[in-house]
Amino acid sequence: MTKKSETYEVQHFAYNTGWANTWTIDSPDGTSEPETFETEEAAQAALDEMFAELEAEIAAGQRDPDDTYDRDEFRIAISCYCEHHEAVWNGIALAITYEPDWLNCSRDNGLDTAHLEIRAISPEGMPLPITETGYRSHFTSAETVASYGGPVAFVLAWLDEEANTPAWRRREAAARQLALF
Image (cartoon, rainbow, N blue to C red; front, side, top):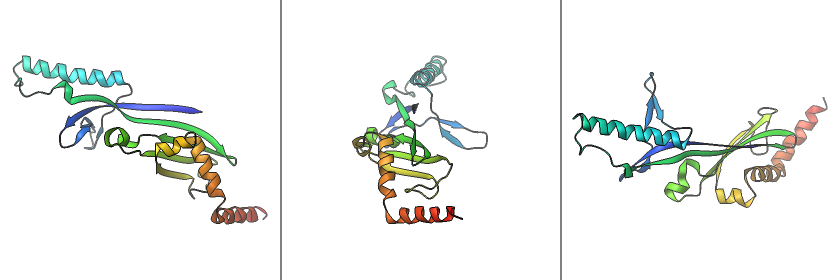
C-alpha cells in the first residue's frame, strides 16, 4: 500500500534567509509552530486574506501605503511531501515513510537529501538487521533510492544485505538457540 501526503506553506522571500515559512501558530502555552495548510488552495486563501487585510488597513488610514508587502515576495510551496508504504521482510511487517526532498533541500539548496523512516510494526519494535529497536531514521539521496526502484525496494535490499553480516547471523543463531528452551 502506498499513501502520499503533503502539506503546503506560505513562504516569504528575504535577502538574508531566502524563501522561508515565517507564518506561525502560537499556542496558549507560549510555544509556536510553523503554520501549514492541507491544500494549496487553503494556503492561497490565507495569503489572499492577508493582502485583503493590508489593503483594508491602508484604506482606513491605519497603515501607510509604503509600509506593506509586494505579492512577489510570497509563494505557496509544498512544505512536506511524504510517501507512506507497507512491506513485509522475513515475516516482519514494516512501515516505511519516505520524504524524497527532505526539508526542501533539493528545491531550495540544490542538495539531493532524502529521508527514510523504517518501523517494524508487527511484531512491533522487532529488531531488524539495521536497528535493534525496530525503528531506523536514515538519510540518503533520492537518486540512490530511485536506482533501487523506489523506497520499498531500497529498504528490502538494505535489510537483505545487512542480514548477511556476521553480527546479524550471530543474533539470529542466538535467537534460534533460545527458542529451543
